[in-house]
Amino acid sequence: MPDGKPQVTLKERLDALRMLPAFFKLVWDTNPWLTVANAVLRLIRAATPLAILYIGKIIIDQVVQLHNGKSVDTHQLWWMVGIEFALAIGSDALGRVITLLDSLLGDLFSNHTSVRIMRHAATLDLDQFEDATFYDKLERARQQTTGRTVLLSQVMSQVQDLITMGFLAAGLLVFNPWLILLLLVAILPAFLGESYFNDKTYALTRGQTPQRRELDYLRYLGASDDTAKEVKIFDLSDFIIDRFKTLSDKFYLDNKRLSIRRSVWGTVFALLGTAGYYGAYIFIIIRTVEGQLSIGDLTFLAGSFRQLKSLLETILSRFTSVSQGAIYLRDFFEFFDIQPKITMAARPRPFPDVIREGFTFEDVGFKYSNAERWANRHLNFTLKAGEKLALVGENGAGKTTLVKLLCRLYDPTEGRILLDGVDLREYDLAELRLHIGVIFQDYLRYQMNFSQNIAVGNIGEQFNEPLIEDAAHQSLADTVVAKLPNGYQQALGRRFNNGVDLSGGEWQKIALARAYMRDATVLILDEPTAALDARAEYEVFQRFAELTHGKSAILISHRFSTVRMADRIMVLEKGTVLEIGSHEELLARDGRYAELFHLQAAGYR
Ligand SMILES: Nc1ncnc2c1ncn2[C@@H]1O[C@H](COP(=O)(O)OP(=O)(O)OP(=O)(O)O)[C@@H](O)[C@H]1O
Image 1 (cartoon, rainbow, N blue to C red):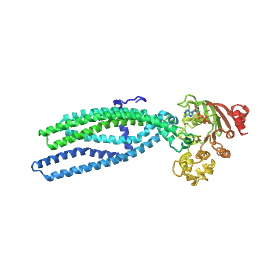
Image 2: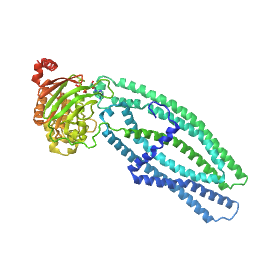
Image 3: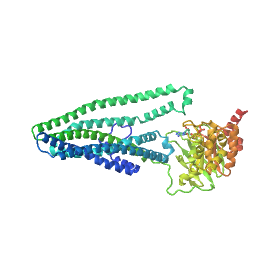
Image 4: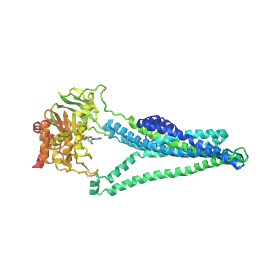
């Protein structure tokens, strides 16, 4: 269905059923044994209603004969009662086992698909995450992980009921085929009504996805440890609650309107169904009174008809919700169809052990897919092997974007980036990322322990304590751990029990340690010391200079005391290179760098 189109046609509904085999493949992958056991038990249970009805008929006929003084084998009669009893108990027990299997399989399925969603999401590009329609798809796919366990038992039940219905219908057909027709006429309006309203509900829910995301966001803003401080200081709670209420009230009204219409029409259609049943019932009674049917036949047929009617109702209404579920499934599989654009060459080159020339930007330009303006344009420069390059420029000048291009978080919109003369796209992507140690300014504060917070820089080494301690030493994070009661095992962050929160500068030292966790060929620090005090900053850079000796490095900083340590400094403005040279050269040129440098120096005087 194209976005924005409010209705789902019956054809689309039937088309969506084609998703079911793929869905069952997913269920099967979750756990083949549980899937088979579930199917077999359901098959057995499908036959029990007819068996119970038929044995009931034999019992009643025999009792009536006894009543009329005829001779009957009472031994056989009690046997029949015993069998019916056993069937009733067995069917009940089977039902419970099936429910249990459904719920086990459902839980496993939900876990399995959540993992698959995370795996797939991990393969996708950064700019796909920054796209709102992508987020809607991700959101819908996430909803499917729990919603689809319902679909699973629905489809299974549908097949089971269809088989039961086949058995019962065969019984009715033998007696009078017209009864089946009567049944269909009574049921059809309910089915069409159900189908109509399901379409409406789907269209409504789908249309509400972005707002639903906003509601989730407001819920998070209104009640979360990350936001509590600012919400209190700015006294935002009423603002957030009002916005939440406006949005949720609108949801409620839309849903209410539809629910009321649905229930009114549902009542009318149910009346039709009941009238159909009583029509058939009267017909059977008349034939029994006329002597053409036995009392046993009467109970058998009336019972069959009643069960058939309710089965048919269930099957038809379940058909709409199964096909409904299948339409949602399409959203789910659509998410898996999204493919990353940043891919590897068919025969990727290994990342060089030693960089000879460096990274060369050849007329590189980049525009974010959701932006009008170019974030970088006409970039021409080389980050030489072993060189320390500092990037300066005003907010939004394109410094971080340039770094993201170097890590291939994005590919250039125009131009190309070469490493030792070969396009970056030719290299193995995982190796490229492994060889570049980068800490972004908006690094994550993991709600995990101290040691893990450093180990995320090279998670394969999470148990390598000497390496972690060494990295902590390089970044001064070891001065933080000394103060923690549980040392490296100290849980950080407030979200979980016993977590300790740290100051901004302390967190930054930890984030910095991540860069030292891998033996990266290129180190990139995006405003790594913004939160550090002056002494810590000085020390960090002393160590950084020692550690990156002979390696290439990029530093982004607004502090000129840091910047001047670099071999060369590149001034960016509106995404392009304004000046490039050493500190002395740029001062001598007396251009923008000199202006900014003197401005900052004046502030310290
Ligand atoms: N994910 C994004 N989607 C759309 N536009 C973006 C995105 N990230 C950055 N931009 C835009 O690209 C331009 C360059 O941003 P960039 O983050 O590279 O600047 P910066 O020089 O690192 O700034 P700062 O000093 O504030 O960190 C800005 O105009 C910014 O608004």
